[in-house]
Length: 85
Image (cartoon, rainbow, N blue to C red; front, side, top):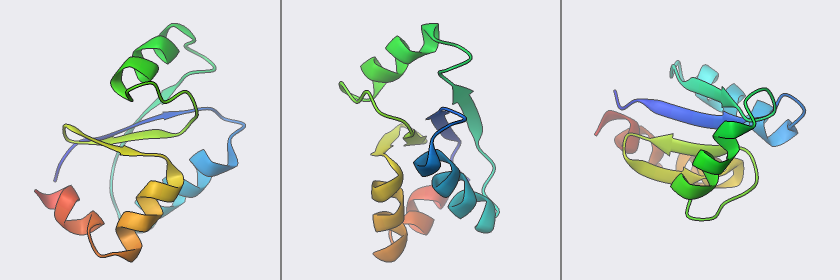
């Protein structure tokens, strides 16, 4: 299973939705709270090629994008292969 990292904020509904999907699939992930660790937000923006909104999700070395992107991968059947690559 590929490592999953997610930059989040506790007030973000999209972050909660992305975490729900990953939890439902039994996928463990590391969460980086950019509200509690504001110095990590610049790291997120750099890694996400300028993406400033949360969540920003990374699976292995792949930047997935946000919550809608994660759900689109799930709907298209591409999330499981990416997780197990």
